[in-house]
Length: 190
Image (tube, rainbow, N blue to C red; front, top):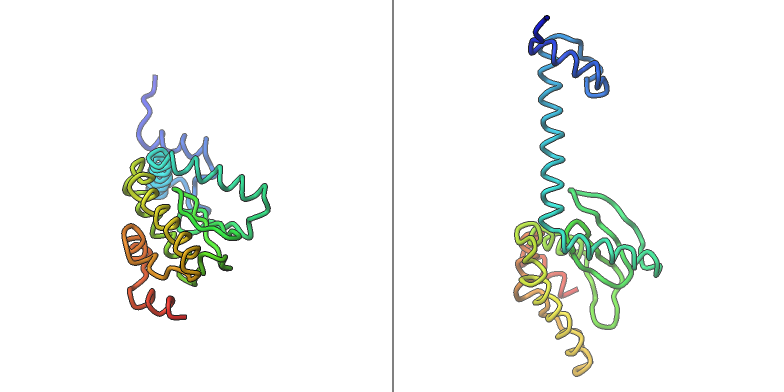
């Protein structure tokens, strides 16, 4: 009985999975080693994706449910996949829930979004990735409290609350989204 060498095993791998071989590759040892590295990179990336999806499971479930509700109610404008996240341009609400980042352009009576909103919500996605299942308590609750304060402020004073981004966790999300304090100040002046 013949023993299978490492090179024979790689040839068998390429024979069984020819779509993994780059077009310019042949069955030379170097090309097969490169294929093995590519397969490893794809496998590692897939494992990371699954692990992060599980780590952020509560947010991902809420985000998927909210996507379904927004779609059913006609509040979706555009969906795109960017930077490993699902960006959903919605009508009238913005929130970051795991892989799902909802943002909007047009304002409502309580909030006037600016051009920085998409980046701000993207910053929240880093918080979600880092905090995992604690995100909803550590970031979601304070963020919702700030929104509710903004609504109450509008009802009592008749003006929009302009300090929403000044405190935790919104200022942290701005920094993670790459928004400088100068950019934020300029957007609030507009």
